[in-house]
Image (cartoon, rainbow over all chains, first blue to last red):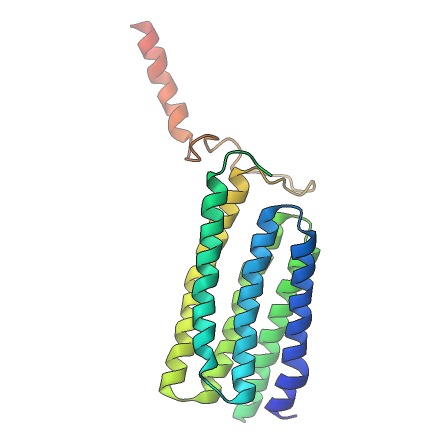
Length: 91
Length: 131
């Protein structure tokens, strides 16, 4: 088995299925915090998918996108939790 | 030989990512969901990025990938702590099978600060009454 086959027929489809499972949690999530955690997980999995895709296409430029995505994901989670902690009424 | 290392890194990273997705879908409670998700997803994405760094083997690209891994390792516990704190302060329910809540009554509900000081102040109030 070559690395290309493993990446194209195992890693990328399995990552897509895992992202679909996370979307189920975003749809179901009882509280808003479950949805934020699912969003954070989705962004982290997106970084992994970008790493796989950059190996498949042999284009290291995509890793720049992964870096910016990591920054934005951390910032969005911190901002969400900061303002949700400050609000008075819950749900 | 190096090909086998890349394949092992990719498979382990993908499996860790899938386990984190299964954990966030199947766990009964917000706190256990958070505890599964943050660690497993960081491990999986970190292994995939290390695989990319070893595959390209150019100092430019390798530095970039390792910077992303270090950034993820530094920031994901901080984000997890902040979101867990916000959830605890707005009284997200725990799973009904959980037996112990060690932080119960330790925090002030209004100011969201640790309220141990308040209990230490109470003897002073009694002293003020005596005067």
